[in-house]
Figure 1 (tube, rainbow, N blue to C red):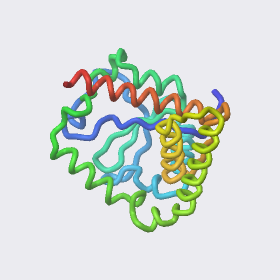
Figure 2 (tube, rainbow, N blue to C red; figure 1 turned 180 degrees about the vertical axis):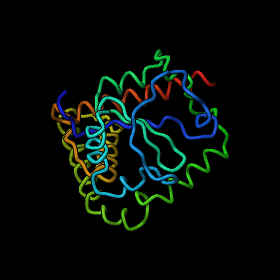
Figure 3 (cartoon, helix red, strand yellow; figure 1 turned 90 degrees about the vertical axis):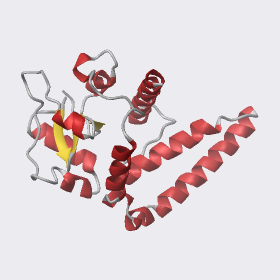
Figure 4 (cartoon, rainbow, N blue to C red; figure 1 turned 135 degrees about the horizontal axis):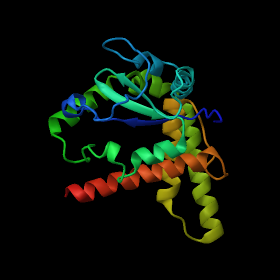
Length: 208
């Protein structure tokens, strides 16, 4: 299989209920051995954690599916787009026990938010370091809105804001920029993000 530097990450589910759940599958998902408490947290302190995860998955021959933990949060990652889509499929019985968004207790949500806010990704120094990129992204978005308005007389601002926000997240977290106007990895990433958004929307509607 062709090596893909992109890695698709899916949180298995944070929370004690999922942590206590034991899969009925006889074969465990392969994964690296991290530190007892931190897991693979050190991988995410580098500039390109997605490449570190992809290299690690290739080393232990778990390119299609690899499991690991960061603290008490359990994750699975895939270096294969089809596998990632299969994970997000509502009809996949292997992941049928994932609780839907909106049905978890507020206490668990607040605990997760507190943990995320203490992560180096959202600390002030890192955010300040990407100030120039955010400014550049904002200028490009304004220029794109202007060009679309001049060409068509109307513009879907949500789409432009979505691509700008997505590019900002990918650059800040994974150190990789995309051009969503050209065919390639950007199109694949946008397709996956749209599928995740649709899946979450369906889960919210079912839980209401």
